[in-house]
Image (tube, rainbow, N blue to C red; front, side, top):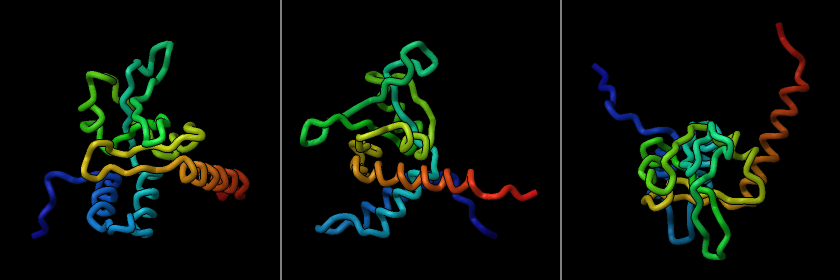
Length: 147
């Protein structure tokens, strides 16, 4: 008899936790960074917004500042984590990493801020991922259609 876990951990959150567990004094292991970035691109991601995304103003993401004073959007691996910030941002919106990579330009992001497995994706990495995604989408559009 195989046991089925009652609480499954979302892929992105698991990748973040694994990366944190394996972190050394030098930083995250490259394989773990790759796993986190892949999970980010392929998983649901949740944003907390101070505005109703269906309203006239659209989504207004919850932000933090980095050490240099740059604003960073915060993203969450679960709706529950995003909902913990309901006083500052009462609206939780589900999206995906690919959409965020395409829409957030010249900015890094923080995944699961203020948690043990917090993870920063710098602006340069977001830009590289955007180029990768755009390249793959262009290739998919050019591929011959199979019937």
